[in-house]
Length: 344
Ligand code: CP
Image (cartoon, rainbow, N blue to C red):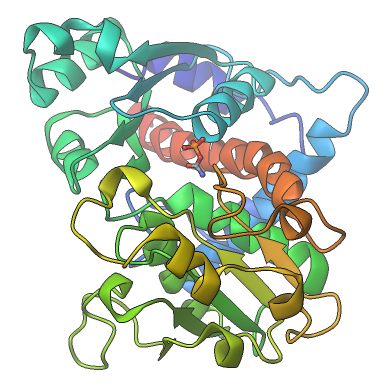
């Protein structure tokens, strides 16, 4: 659990970066589970804090002691390259102790329940638990049973909030604001937690979002009134949907979840839905190409587009570090304010 001594010590120190933006909007969240209830002010605060963190990362020695004394555990029940490594680096840049736990090599493999596992990590001293799980809702369960901050690093088909935040940050780096920008999200939206979280943040900030997929890969709940996802344009024809797009976000074809006969075959899918050079030519000149990764090159995106001039895929990954630093800083400020209140 958050060591109150460490929290008080941090409260007594000025953070080693500008935090004016954090002062103007109170951050009230101990956990980051999804973006579905985020206000515009909260999204703006994360973006501004990430800008601050980018300044830290640009220093000759990109290390600050802002989270010294804080213990962060990553608990991944599913594989990850980008999310886990960028959270680990984000914590280390901020001076926290970061411990990585792979469920496959933990007592989970002996049958330990999720609740017992997170309670154990809390007892070990975790201030923050960053969690990826194949079951939608698993981080919500964890957040109910521990005092540690829970950050959702991807739960089942449901949400991947820090990916959507880094996607937003990448778009804003090019456009300033996403308001009125046409963002086409194309691919296996049915299985995509990345798409779902992006729908919330992008629509909250006024982007014109089109979701493009075969009918079998469109998630339910996009109709106005159904309420499980924000209403967006839906189009099954990529050649039409991509016209005039400012951003084209290709989603990974989740081959491991493709045993339901969702598409006739990968060749047919690629013919209809691959983001390739001829289709990209229909978007606005210089439109951004994004992909959350890992990419199936030759399936949802062609090799030349994935690595072409319009690809911002590597920038997305780099922005992930700054955005995750921002998230770690903000969720730990919740504990910091609470400890300060308790000692008054
Ligand atoms: N985008 C994403 O979540 O990538 P990883 O699975 O590599 O973390």
